[in-house]
Length: 269
Image (cartoon, rainbow, N blue to C red; front, side, top):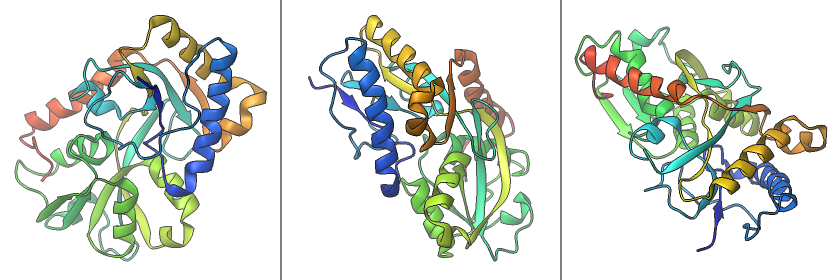
């Protein structure tokens, strides 16, 4: 079995160089620590929400909500990055409701009866966090006229910029990268509202990874996040630190789910 490494969460085509530089720096630290049989390069075609986190996954990044649900018991969290982008507070992030720049909407209530795009039913920032935010105002009934699952955060932003729907929700880190690499398109959208806060998307490895290798991965990530010699590798991904978040922090995502159910809004609709 060949080990696999990927960074599928923030993986715009324009970001392949900075993602590759991050893996190159991490890989070098792992080699120095004695880890062998490492992949030379990242796998760039891994889906943000794959079918599973298999034993071949040595290093990846996976949304916190599916880690608590469909991927429960399949992965070990290695560390949570802190991103130097608007909307992050240390190792947290949030979802953003994005609308066309010319939208008449001024608050979430104004989106009622519109068309909403989300990337995946298993997404935290695309589904779980906006579901919780909307549960407070949905009055226990469908909020939108149409909800479409598309498979892509960046694709949804592009579609909102083209005026193909009334709103979407993406995490603030995705939005920051998309605005950076596609500034002309970004001028055609705006932020309407934020969701509740959430732990940021962690780096993970398979539960099949030997404990000694897990420890080396964690140490290497902390070194990469804090040493001057690796500053360029982390700067391209706007990472200011990588920290250990307790499991209870991610269980809050299931509390958001339960709260939405208690408010009679169990499904984003």
